[in-house]
Image (cartoon, rainbow, N blue to C red; front, top):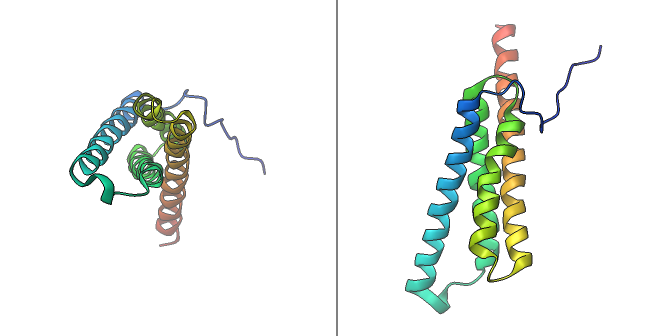
Length: 138
């Protein structure tokens, strides 16, 4: 028994509203997160260490949470697509904001956003499928 699987890079069959919501939510989160980190650096300066790790982890977790919520709300089996395309907003903003500091850091922070989106979409789809299985058993 073979399942008909579509590529996560194929946007056919996605709901455009949820796709746009994912991109806008990732952009808004990344902008707010970068602003918060800037505020920390301005106010606490030398006391703040590990900014590179903070940026990577923050964008990863933000994209993961957004992709999870969007894939759970959309309920169409395309959660990974929403996560990947939504996290591109965080990727672009990370490249723009961090590029002058370090090119490698900008690429790493941006990729963490994409990885978070992928994992969040995957988790959201698996969670939704498990809930459907439980409902069928009852």
